[in-house]
Image 1 (tube, rainbow, N blue to C red):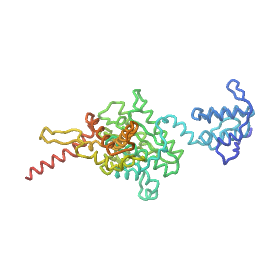
Image 2 (cartoon, helix red, strand yellow):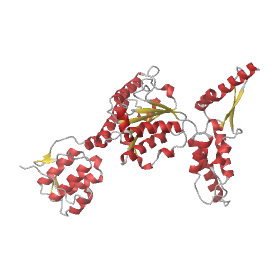
Image 3 (spheres, helix red, strand yellow):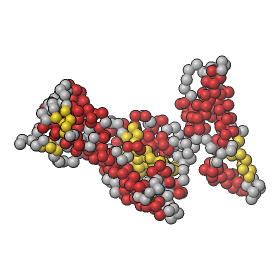
Image 4 (cartoon, one colour):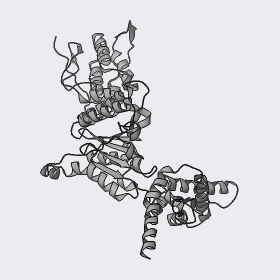
Amino acid sequence: MAKYRPRVPDAGKPPRERALATKGTSTVTDNSNKLTGKSASWMIMDDIYSDIKFVPPAVAADRMSEAKKGGGSSDAYDAMYAYMKAYGYASSGGLFSDGSRTSSAPDPHRALNAARQKVEQYLQSTDYGTGWDDVIGNEPARQALLEAIEHPVKHADLYAKYGMTPSKGVLLYGPPGCGKTMFGKAAADALSRLHGAKTELLVINGASIQSGYVGETEKTIRNIFAYARAYHAAHNRQLVIFIDEADAILPNRDRGYRYEASNVATFLTELDGMQTNGAFVILATNRPEAMDEALLRDGRCDRKIRVNRPTYEDAIRIADKHMTGKDWAQDVNGTQLADYVFDAMRLVRVLTNHDNGMTHHFLLSHIINGAMIVGLVERAKTLAMRRELAGGEGGLCVNDLHAAVDAVLAENKGLNHDYALREFVETVAIPFEMARVNNMTRN
């Protein structure tokens, strides 16, 4: 019997539109799971279109064959074939031969669909449009990421000239709330702009994939990298994998449990086995010292980028960006908020070095981060709205900004600030004491 050669009507239209244009109206009879009748293929079309991920390719092909034997419309098969091919269910060589499914050249989109189902819960789209300019401050971190992400594509000739290979990944470390996740989103957005297509981002919280069952965490890690390879094969561009709290699944093997060592070994094996440009891995952590050193060597994480707290100038820019609205009661701006936050009177606690009796003021500006600044603006807006609902003056005013800062300061006085305290001692207290001792010695 001659092979069935699919004919695609109205090739200029989308598959679904072609299908609806040729859809018949006759009835369908279901007998022992075998479809018969002229419109059988339309039933399959609706099944797959309604929720394509729940219809395996082999099942769809078998049902199409049954419908063809029952005398279905040729145009219906053509439209169904086009639809299935558009979603990776058909290979480039055709799907049917003698009324049954045939195997031919591997279709990367089929492999991508299969791999996607295992990691779908971690996928995010780049529709949010977070670009490099949306990440305020941390210019060195932004420049390093931009070079790692964009230069291999924009300047491929120079990469070839110098014999360079694209980075497999970077480590972002620093205080919480300072933009590490935003950098991951901006990296994915940069790739989508470079390739002119919608790009996905795998966002994974390290603790969320840690399983109590033997081998489950390692299986998830393998699935993540399997999807990255399938994504690269289908789209010929990198997939950005962002792993937050990476120290939870990739700790120092000399200090952790045996199952944690297995997690690290699996991750290293997959990372080392990645094809060129298969994925770009961004590891984010607040505790870089807790991560396994083998993971951080060059050739794996080529860049170790510190993400710092916002400066006074950064705080103004962040506040101005989020201080949007109309009919404010006064002319308010980010400078008024930053002045109050960075004032030396915003005291969180007094620290005393009992060895020498020196005291230090631990201030709100020492724990500030980008997320807190955004939260301060939102809290000030809430206070303004509450006042207006009570019949008072509407619109945001300076007093709302100050009241929001005072409330946040009071809340933070009783909280754990170990990370910020370590930073403070290392960067402020110790240098201050050393300088003071040196001055006393010289005098």
